[in-house]
Length: 447
Image (cartoon, rainbow, N blue to C red; front, top):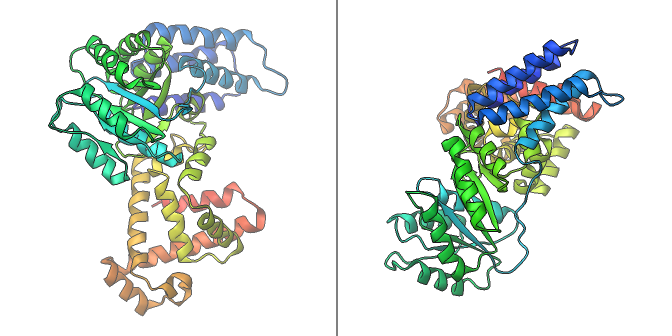
């Protein structure tokens, strides 16, 4: 996974190596533990924490008897998984919206990605059926209100703020009054640039006015182990605090930030996994470690699909695919569903067996190819989309001109369509088998 730099890739390789071992002895266990140590230290996880973790893994792997029906290899893999989950806080702690209005006070040092994260949480809540409102009390940063306005307008979310009013407490009071009938109100506050003490002071002042249901601290994942200090100060100052770690995409220090925060006992509720508004997820240590170790996360994939996919269209498309009536229109719907679930790399990493195996270039090419295919299909008539058999040379020439592509690109789309249809027929006859699905994915991967 792109997240946490090379940590996911290194850990996946370690697990692959372990899975390929025919004998699990003391030498193998020590070798695997060293690989894990190296991967975690490179990702800025605290050395003492790494040593503590590796000792636990080694002790359990060498002393525990595997349960009945479990091979020694599977047992060691399970131990690694369990201990790494424990490192990140054991279990998920969700955001429970249990009162109206549910008031969320957002805090963060300057540059932590607080305002962008508010936009991401709004999008997340919308998908869960809530309609949040936002109050801007940031009177320090000149562009704060404008940035929030841009974010909320795109999502059709109500915003209260006044760039001319420099009294944060007054803005909070007025916003609270305006949105008193909303289910969820999010309060943006001024980011501090010095230290945690300023942040806590800001929180205490606004706390008296807002009386928040939950205070959330946004921590920049690129600061590594320093994240622990911020989380500790924050969790000591409030009983209703939780953490969002932002900017976890591609940072070598992300492992340090996650483990440092988890060690303080402050609950991590969400993580920002990329720049896009939908690259944001509820933090679940079990799912996170599954993906990091290359085991996939089918549960997240299914939930993500349920959030964004129109069930009627999905069912019709799937029925057509399996019955052999698959059209270009169905394929277009398929592409739309894939796109709405987020970047291809992220989606594929949730599938067991694929995590860490897909080169970045391949998934980028896949996304580019899907975009090109959609442009080509937009130049086709309704009749052509429903009955691709009629698309012969003269129609191919017209479609390529309309889409601004080569005729060979149109032919490539038709070839992909025919191969997909054939693969789907095979699945329909034999049930949902991995071979046919792999062949279909392979069409994109082997370009």
